[in-house]
Structures are given as structure tokens and as C-alpha cells.
Image (cartoon, rainbow over all chains, first blue to last red; front, top):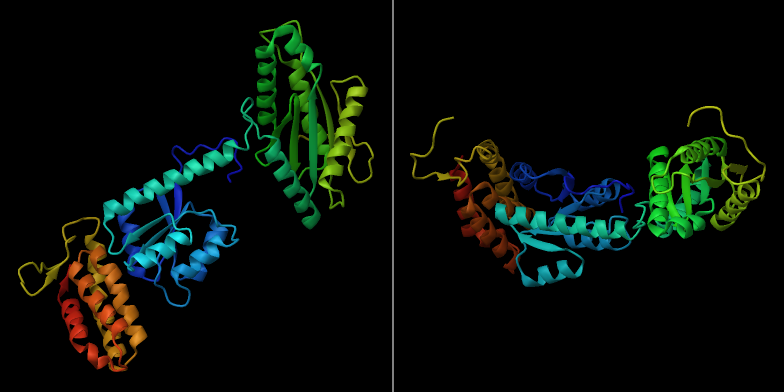
Amino acid sequence: MKQDLNNDTDDKRHSVLVIDDSEDVHRLLQARLRQENIDLLAALDGRTGLAIAEQDSPSLILLDLDMPDMDGFEVLRELKDGSSAHDIPVIVLSGLHSPADKVVAFDLGAVDYVTKPFDLMELRVRLRAALRMSDLVDMLARLAHVDGLTGLWNRAHFDDRWAACISENNRHGRPLSVALFDLDHFKSINDTYGHPAGDAVLQSFAKLIKRECRASDIPCRYGGEEFALIMPDTAPEDAKFVCDRIRTELAALSWPAHPERKITVSIGVSGTDKSVAVTPEQWLEDTDKTLYRSKKGGRDQVTAIDVESGNMVEASAKAA
Amino acid sequence: MESNTGNPELIMSEFADDPDMCDLVREYVGMMPRRMEQMTDAFEHNRREQLIRLAHQLKGSGGGYGFPILTDKAGKLEHFLHDMTGDDLAEADAEFRALLDVCSKLAA
């Protein structure tokens, strides 16, 4: 699934991998599909095709069946059997015309079957249809991970990515920080000014986090008025600096629905600049405790710790 | 390039007038003598699998380059080679010659 919150599929340029042992067919497809909004990748054998599929994650694969060494059926089998490229749609483009071959190809996971020699218009419309369907599936998968009110990633996405980031930290010792945000006295906003005003606060805060974080950061709505920000490759000192900026900017915002009432946020940050043996759950629990310290300390503040030592850290002086 | 349209023996591509395709078809036709050599070599040395593969590739590409008859003749040879029970490729002589004949007449 794409990891970009601003993913827009309307004018997306797709890449299509052609796996065919005939150079004539590659040349033909290059010429015939020139008008389509796609980039063609080429593999002259099944093994190379599988490697390119794993590495480049094309939007679609056009696959010949009758190839020496590794035929298209084997490629399909390997592709769909645990490969990281298993959800890439495959259109078989083959000179094999028998119903039995088609049945096997569909059973192995092909989404369509076009026979050679192919009719250009037919191939184009089938290609477009498969790419449209693939975009829809991507969009649905993405929506299942996006919070409807704020447009940030949701809790399910946070859980997936947090586990992945921790394992990346464990393997490579890369810095990693996470922040938990809790809007101060949020319930009273809803109670005093109504839920639309509360929703507007949540949406504005989400926009603020998105604007302030880097493309590689992962901003999420953690639940209710709580938000989380995963910051890969960020030491806790730098994470605290970023969070302090978010806190300050929020406190400076004016609110048309309640100009007399400012909104503030309490933030807990924990992180490390090296590999640490802490479980995702323990790390979050520690972060939650630092958030509690910010609340306890009077709210509208950031508390940050080194997750391994538990020592408090100060914000770095440099801009993150 | 000199036009071949006046020679009734030659087989013109259906895409000869398609500006997107004419260079490609010319290149395809230009490679045909090499293909014929490879097929003749496989046939004369009784290399059935190699001949099947070469015929299969022509079957798959011929129509796409505007030569449906090439797809037809290559398919017939491939089919015959798949089905033949003996080991001597001479059994496929007629189908092989028919394909070579078509290959030799292709023109852009």
C-alpha cells in the first residue's frame, strides 16, 4: 500500500512490467502502448521478471506463458505464493489459446488473459480496466487506514507502522522517536461550543501536524483527542524541538467559533539514537507516561525522554 | 526506402502505412534472414525444441507486426512439431518450407 497521505491516483503514471522472452514483442508493446500513460519495464525471462516485480513494484504485469527455463505458470505461482509482489495484477499475454491454459492461469491468480497476436485496441482497454481496478483496490486499502475526520492515518495504520519502525531500529540502529499528543481540556470544547467546534479543532490540529512534520514522518489520529507522530531517523532531542514548535503554533491559533478560548496540547516524546531492546508496547507505555508528566506539570508543554535510560532530554537547538 | 508494393510475390505488412509502426516493421523484416538461418540450422541439426521455440516466437509476434499469415504458418509448424510422434524433423518438411517461404517474402 502507498504510504503517502496525499496520494492522488487521478493522473498517476503507472509502470507496467512486461515479462516475455521475445524481444519482438517488447519492441511492439513499446511502440503500440506509447500513447498510454504508462512506463514499460522489460524482462526477457521469468526469473528476471520476478526480481524486477519485487524491486520496482510495478502497477501491473503483462506475462507471457510459454518461455524457456521458467514458464509463465511458474512465474505466477511464485509471484502469488508469498512474494512481496503478490498483489500486483497480472494480465497473461500468450500464444497459448487452449481453455485449459486459461483456466490454470486464472486459478493461479491472473486477472485477465489476452491471446497473441493481440488486437491493439483490445489490449489497451483491458490494460486500462486492470489499472483502474488496481487503483480502486489501492484506494480502498488506503481508506481502511485513514481517519475519516482528520485525514491522518488511523490507529490501525499506526500499529502496523510502529511495529515496522521498531524492527527497523532494532536491525539497523537508526534513530527513532515517537510523540503522543493530547489536546488539553478537549471535552469542555465539545460541551461548551458543540461537537462541530470540537471537530474543527481536531481537523485544524491534524493540518498543523501534517504541515510541520517531514514526508517520512507518520502522523496519526490515535483515538479521540489523542494524536501520535512517529518520527523515523529522529533522535529525541530533535523530536522534542519539532513537537515544541507544534505546541507553540497551536497555542497561537485563533478560533472563529470561540475566539475567547485558546487551544493547547500536552505532548510526551520518547526516542533513541541507537538500537534499543524495547518492545513496541513498552515504548508506547513509556511515552504515555511522559505525556502524563506534561499533563501533571501544568499542560501546554512537551516532555521528552531517552527511551533506553528514561532520562529527560532537552530540545536540540537546531531546526529539524 | 524503395517501395515493394509493385511485386505481387512480396507480403506487405498491414501496418506499412502506419507512421508509428513503419520503422518497427522494417526492423522486424530486416531481422528475418537471421531468423531463417536459425530455423534452418535447427531443422538441419534436428533440434526440435529450438525449432518449436523459434516458430512459437514468430507465431506470437507476426500478427502484431501486420503479418497474420506469418502467425498462421508459424503456428502450423509449432503445432505439427508438438504433435509429431517420430524424432526426425524431416516429417515436418512441408510446414517448415511453407514458413520459410512466407519469411522470405515479408516486406515493410
